[in-house]
Figure 1 (tube, rainbow, N blue to C red):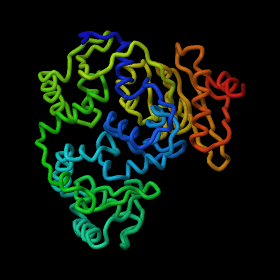
Figure 2: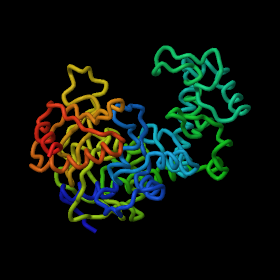
Figure 3: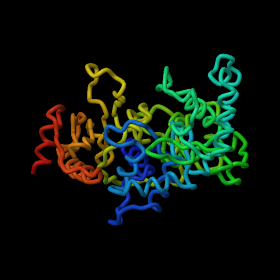
Figure 4: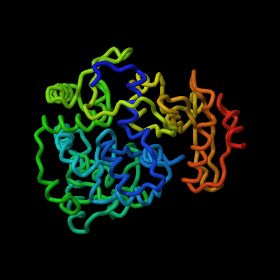
Length: 396
C-alpha cells in the first residue's frame, strides 16, 4: 500500500470511499442498494430545508441515480435504521446507536447540572411526556394534547411539548419510531428497539474506535480532524482511537502533498486510476459538508448561504456543488417549483479551471433530476457565468 498519495489520487480515493465511480447495473436501485450505501456512508444527514429536495434523499440520487423515494423511506423508517445526533441529526444503522450512548449521557449530565436549563425548569413536563408515551404509544409532537403544545419563542418556535420530546430524544429516553410527513414520531425505547440494542453497553474507548473506524472507511483517506468531524468527536477522544487503529493496521499513515497535516489511508480503500462521475451534491453531503476538507481536497471554498441576507449572497439560496469526475467544478442554485412542474436553475456558476465540457456533462444530470422529481421542464435563469452555456445545452 502506498505511503504517499498525490492530491489527485487522494481525491479519487475519497470519492470512491463515498460510493462514486461504481458501474451502474442499469436496474433501478432498491432497498438492498440503499442499505449497502448507508452502511458505506455510515449515515444520511437530515435537514428540513425543502426548496429543492430534502437533503437525505440527495446523496442517494448522486451515487445511484433515479430511484423511488418511497422505497428509501421504507428503509429509513424500518427497524434496520434509526435517527440520532451523529454528524448532525442523521439516519444511522440501528447498530450504531449504542456507540453514541456516551453522547446521550453527556447531554443528560450537562443539562441536569445547569440550574437554569429548560429541563430543570420543566421536569414535570418531561415526566408527563414519558407517561403519555407509555400509555398511548408512539406519537408525533403535534398529536399530543397539552396546554403547552403551542409554538412560541426561540428554538425554531418549538412548543414546550416539542422541546421536552427533543430533550428526552437527545438523552435516549425516547427514540424515533419513524416519520409521518417528515414529522418525527417519538416512542419509548422498549416500544421500538430490540433488547439487543437497548441493553448493549459499549465502553467509551471502544465506541470511539468503532466510530472512527466507520468514519475512516467512509473517508478513504483523511486527517484526524476529518475523521473526528464525521461523528462530531473531540480530539481528546478521536486521536487515541486513530492511534489504536493505526497500531492494529486498519489505518495506514500516508503523506499527501499540500495537505500539511498527518493523514491516514483506510486499509480497505480503493485507489482508482480514474474517476467517472457527474453529480449534484447536497450542501449536507459528506463530500462537502466539512468546509476545510472540501477546500483541501478540491480547492473549493463553500459556504451555505441559506441564512445569509439575500443582498449579501454570492451564489444563491440553496446551492448544490457540481461534481465532474474527481473535481468540484461548479455550483447550481436550484428550486423545485412543484406547482408549475419546473426545475428552476436560479443561478449557475463554474469554478476557475472548470473543463469546457462542464455544461455538456451537467445537462443530462439536470434532465434526469427533472424526471426524478416528477417535473416536466427546466428553466435556466441568466444569473451566473455558466448560465448561457447550460441553457444552450439544455435547449439542444
